[in-house]
Length: 276
Image (cartoon, rainbow, N blue to C red):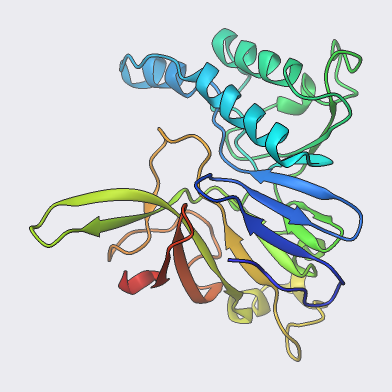
């Protein structure tokens, strides 16, 4: 599931087999893309629903650390919902993130796109935040949820409409949706698997919004490729994209996706997501 260059030379986004993560290669760097880490999710279940679930924070950290070591990227880009609480992070959540960043390899840059769960994360995580020790952790920048362009690859969270700069990129990547597919076997059993969604942006819903009036592809051109990342946190559930009457979370889905196909984490191509 590799995206070929469209306008800029050498731009591609390649999912990592069997992982909810991808490598974006641009003209200047390689970035590891992950979405919906939801640090502190177990604490949220306990506080919000009274459900006790053992913390998987060490497992999440080890999985991400292994990916960083294995792929050796220049940048880690978190496409929203790095943390779970909507307000300020509590003790377990903030502690999980502090240990996570302390464990990251030296020299890597980190971009955190704010998700709807990231609250005031920039007040304590970004390089210019009070008390942030940049000598002990990677260089961290926190950007708005409508995203930024990483030299041909646009990244946003997906809970709000992307910025025009993101939509002028070759490929647009986001999370928020936690896409899953419900698969049935011959005897009526079923299971739910995380999935990638891939297609191309449909101009129609974007054409209706004045903020996008100057997009180069809106009326005469090739719209960007669109990739929806599965959630990195495997506890959070998601949208069953192949089940009828499911409501999508993103304001521009499903109307903004054309020729959408689903892929399992192992790379299996399932075809058009509605008919899986």
